[in-house]
Image 1 (cartoon, rainbow, N blue to C red):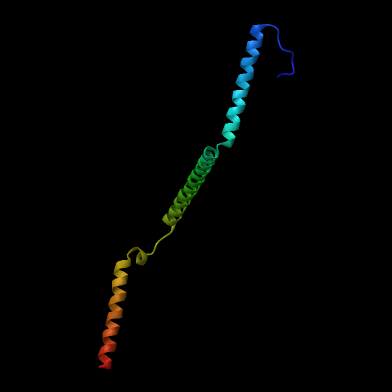
Image 2 (image 1 turned 90 degrees about the vertical axis):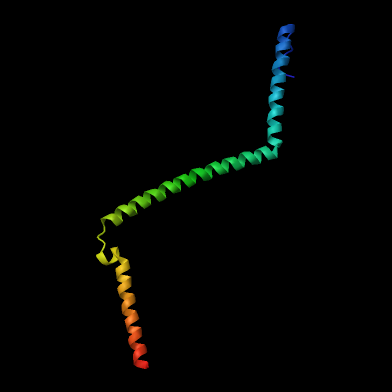
Length: 109
């Protein structure tokens, strides 16, 4: 019981009993929550998942900012005409190699 004396008034006694029951109910609920391992594990997983989502968003934002920075840097760089048109250069190099192979084959024959 409480450290105070028991009240003589029946209404005050009922009020004290109701308060004690409410306190006891809160204590039982708290103990029950602590012993519910499945719920605690689920809460921990949810917490870790939320932290992971926040970190992923932060990394994604950093990647986007870096991509914009790289894009801006590349836009400022003067690209030679040869690099801008790689297909004609590849065709010319391939034709030159082909001619060299034909000449070598013809000389060995």
